[in-house]
Length: 440
Image (cartoon, helix red, strand yellow):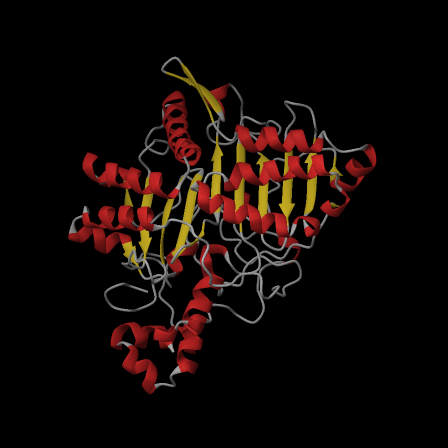
């Protein structure tokens, strides 16, 4: 929805060629009426029932391809521009969501600094920039992200902003992320710039082609969030009171390591190292269960961009068979992802992951040597993490490779999601509108 008009934003604040705005069902119609006319209209159209429709942002069943086949191109977010054509449902194992996994409750996460930083960032924008950047919390813009460089994004890019405005954006990331998470975002951008310089194409590959959008209005009580989106780097950050959902998040790079101004800059090493440590802690019997293929294709990711409704059955090794040491090594893989959020939010998430550890499954493809290309998927009712060593892509020339070569640790894609309907904080948003006294 557009923040000013209350209409559903499918493509963004302004209509783009090849995209369209759609109000195809009663839910979207009610949203439009509510945001245009306020709570009086909701009361007139049915009170609690209308709020229920506003909160229900899902279909009864997902329409994604079976077996987790992603829509779009490589990584579920291929070249060109795509549009969301289905309601959000979330990642599931069989097309049916597990209920009662997420509730609106206090987590003691200190979201105040994030709220303050986001408000300061918005206040630092011009009126035109703010209109371009800010959407409602229900906006489809949440789902219109991609890791692909050529994707047409909304919001304001870092190149659009002054030094002062960019400093406010950095402060927002610093408030939302851990020191390691902030460093990862900065290194991905630096590597993108350096690789672009190495192949002579900084028009497509640079450190400024990353875009901000803010969903809703930063608030201590009402739901809101932001998205930071660009090549190999996507952060979706939802806030409701002291609850945080930081997913989907995409981290990657090509190459994953380069010499820049005499310094070796590396990213995505944490998840690669932790993954190899885990697989090499397993017995031969356990490996036979977890390794689905000894070879690694150039593209294995199941739930990249435009794959919000992926259906993927549990496969591989169930973690109730792991020893205590092996469980610790597996948790280190998830921690490599979750640890990029601020520490208190990461602790809450890791507690949720541990609660479902015995119902977690791990799947592997590829080699297990220190330099092997591999694919890892960690999948439970509450967490989905993929580490995917890709084949050389458009930046292959920056590290002496060529497209068509085999998968390599020099090109890594990693993604973190929250299955069963809580990516983008969607399930918490739904519950908020159904249960909050001022929305009833």
